[in-house]
Image 1 (cartoon, rainbow, N blue to C red):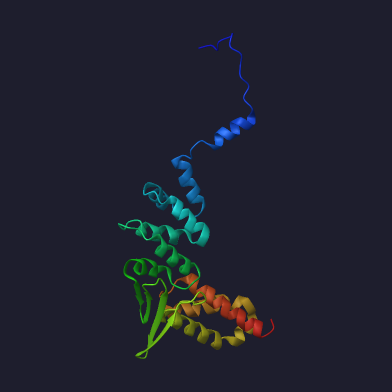
Image 2: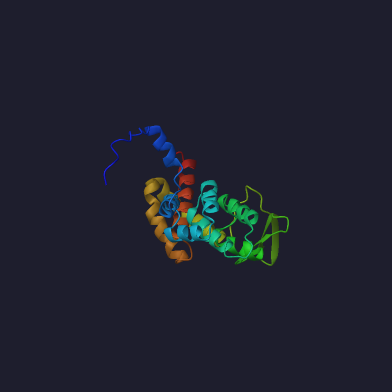
Amino acid sequence: MYPETDIPLIPIREEYMKEVGKKVPTSVRQKIDHLVMLGIPRQEAMNALWKEYDEVLEHFVISYGNPKVCAKFLSVVFSSERPDLLKAEKLIERYSRGNIPPESLEQLYEGGEFVSGDSRITLKDDGTLSYSLRTDDKVQVEDIGLDFKFKDRGMLNLEETIDRVVEENITTIKERGESSFKLLMGQVMKEVRGRFEGKEISELLKRKIAEVLNNSGK
């Protein structure tokens, strides 16, 4: 086919083409790629798009971070018959502050209670959270404020173990500084025997070593 020679060409400005380009709907592939760029696993991104909560997921991730946790939690929320987004966002917001652990999200959303060892978190009817810790048959209860940091009995035991290892190696830490980390890490790992994530142990141990060095003026 050849263009009609008697019909003049209509010039199209580059600005016009750009404006038209902005109105072209985003493709499914582009939406998925965008969510993946935010750190959301591809399968979770596809699931969110299929069930039409991709915009909610994007809002949660941008507002509170933790894309994998948000994606997993929202897949549970939107599998329910009537998703409660106010409750879901309240829980994610509290998780992002360190008030509650990630493994509590689903149980608090669905049943209003999470139990881990001697620790219990409950979601009250008014949307607030409370925390109780049972030790030696005594129960301590407190409301979970914005500055509250969740520590179940297991995490308390981990900190106690690290404190003891640090105290036993206080001279080594002062002499070797941060290079003492590997030695102490090995000792702690041997004692806890896989009951905690390596990342949790290393972060807490590094902080304890730093406290010793700061107090000693190094």
